[in-house]
Image (tube, rainbow, N blue to C red):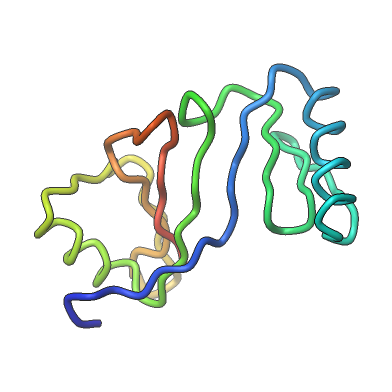
Length: 117
């Protein structure tokens, strides 16, 4: 990866105050944007694969944004040169030990951002 890492929004996490509110919002988002329905996990109700409507106290005052990139470690190096720091406790690795997930340390406009493959 060169100095201009390629990023795509993988999904957006939205915080809600209750599981009921999360289910209602996920259903609305799915219907509005034809996302193919909803499904639940222990911490969220998903509208398709685009919106993770969270039902528990998770990262970010407003939620989070998942930024997908082909090489998380290379993207981290590019961002480090721009002064970005990372929450090392959030690092996840693949079976070969390569970083495939990490949160940026700083919250931006109430959102936590994370890099993922």
